[in-house]
Image (cartoon, rainbow, N blue to C red; front, side):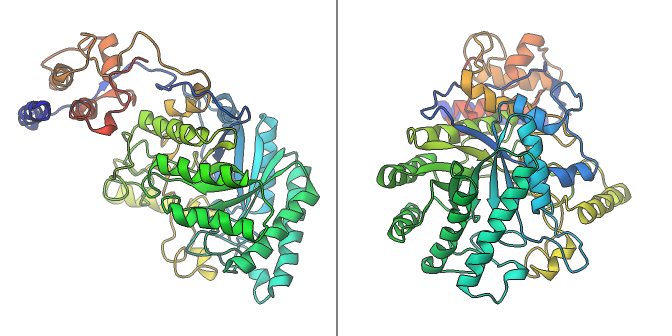
Length: 504
């Protein structure tokens, strides 16, 4: 009966709104989001972020701003917001024969060294993520670097070891504080052109020995993905033990639109930590704060793609983005002391030029400007020059950022309130005087609150400053139809109303 009443009221108000032009109301600004305190079992729990493309973005004219709109160095912004570890990918030679970059940040050793130095200057440690490829490596492709093509397995192991040590030395000499080294990226099906765990174990071992020789205190991580297939992940851990592969950290990607439930993630990690004594860690996660596209290049998560499913438990808002990060941290923390941490993937990969709201010639002009920057500085996920190395994927689908709506900065580079989740999980940020969703101030959330918001949007009611603060349930600094809808979905017991009816 409750669900029927909620949707009956919703339908009636939609009829009213259909004949009106409802605009958003400005909500009072605030510096944080609703976050629960997490008591971490590991005192060194990693609250990390991958920002591998940031130098290319800066070269393309992107700047980053704090919550007040003041331009600041992004590494200071991240550190001040509670990030304590930076992850950076390394490709061997991401350039074509004419030295044009493949894109994706043109993430070579020199750029990793610069990123590592800036991270250390702001008190953050560095995870070096070796792909052992000249461009993207993932379960569908693990192509050897151009310079290693045709080498035998033993020859490749020597090259991998030499490249690992020389790269780490260059990065350290630049001033980086290297705390962890990742041997391969999402290596379920191969590494550096080799497949099968007999061959993969040889290369894992070569990388691990290189790290141990470089710095015995640095952690060695192996990175896999698809944790929703729990049996396969456990088999990988079993096989690594059988092959006597040396490593410290079993890392996995976790994207909620692909990778199953958080309970399953905890179960997989607990098995690995309990059985083999390894640290476990999420090396990549992310969540959209909006379903809009800002740069003219399609996004991984959009209204038509990866935006629904039983494991998408949060709204696509800054608050929902923070909920995802907090929840993934809780899932890893539930493993116990061996739950090492979470890295958010490319949390600063915003657009280099905003095309939203443009059309016709204006849109085409701005998109052309963006493409020129992507090509010149590698600030898109792939440039046309990558066709030389990856003709079937990157060379065909080259373009801009596919995750600009999953960053912690808006399309203008200003920090979103969700960025503070990295520090707020240490203390919590639930204030006692604001009940999320209680637009009418009755101290409970019900259909009247959704109705009041909708009436205010068509100028049939007014919301004062306090009411606007309570009504902005998605914490995007606007009170609009989305807030009313989230309240209705909460009342209908949908999960994406998380945070409503809690004090903050």
